[in-house]
Image (cartoon, rainbow, N blue to C red; front, side):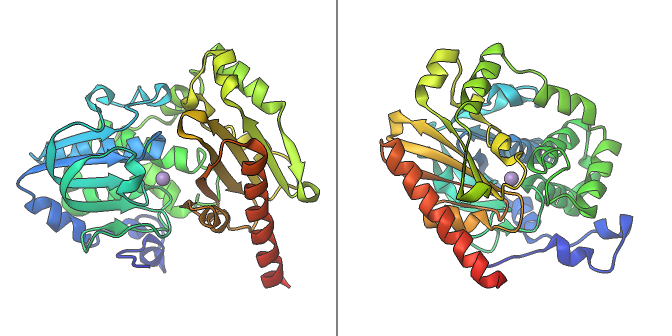
Length: 346
Ligand SMILES: [Mn+2]
C-alpha cells in the first residue's frame, strides 16, 4: 500500500505545536494548477467525516477561486444538515462532466454509489487499501479522519484562508470519526488539531448538540426495536444488533436513522467485536457495520466479505435476501478472524 504522507511519522519526536508543522503535501500543487471544474464526491450514506471533509475542501477551494462542486448520492442526511452551505450539496449522479473528480473518505469512486462523469480522478482518504488513481492521491490510514487531511491541505496551501465555516466542517469530521474524542484513533494529534479548529471558530458544544440532540421520536422507537434484537455470540466476545426493513416502516424512519446503532452492542462488557446488520431489500442485501473494542482487526472481517475500512471500524454488504444466510456468513467471517488473531497471540 502506498502512503504519501504520515501524520504519525511527522509526529515523531515532536510535541505540541511543533507537531503541526508545515509539510509538503503533493496534492496541493496539483490542486493549485487545476483550471477546469472540480467535483468533490462523498461515499453514499455520507457520515460526518465524508461530508465534513468534503465540505471543508469545497469551501476552501471556492475561496481559492476554483470552480468547485460537491455532491453525494444521498444528498445531506438530517443529522448533518447544520453544516454551513449544506444546501449547496448536489444530489449525484447529475449529467455534467467535471474535469477533476475528488472522492473523499472513500476507498474509491465505487463507494460514491452513483455513475458520475469525471476526467482525472483523485482520492483523499484514511481507509486502509482501496483503489489508487495516481500520484495526486492523498491517503493516510493513520489520520484520525479524512477531515484531518483536509486541514493538512489548507495548512500547506494557505492557512490564512481558514475561517469559522471551514474549521466547523473539519471539526465535524474529526469529532464524529473519533466518537467525539473517545475511540482509539484519539491521540495527541487529534486534540492538537481540535484545539486549532476551536481557535478558528469551531464550537464543540454546538456541533455536539446539532449532531446528537436532534433525534426524532421515530428514531428513538427505531432504537428501541433494534435494542430488542441484541444478541451475544462466541461466549460473549461478539455482539450484534439487527434492523429489519419493517422497523423503518413501523417507526416512520429511514435507513439514515440507523447510523450509530452499532454502538449499542459495542457497549456491552466483554464484547470484542460488535456489528449491526441492516436489511436493504430494494438492493437485495444486508448492510453490515463492524466495530472492534479490543485488538480484533475488523477490517479483515469486512475484507473477507468484500468490504473494507479500518482496524476498529469497517463495513461490508452481504448479498442475499435471507437473514439466516447473511448472519451465518457474517458470523463465519468473524469466527475466522478471531481464530487467526488467537493463533497470532499464542
Ligand atoms: Mn472517515
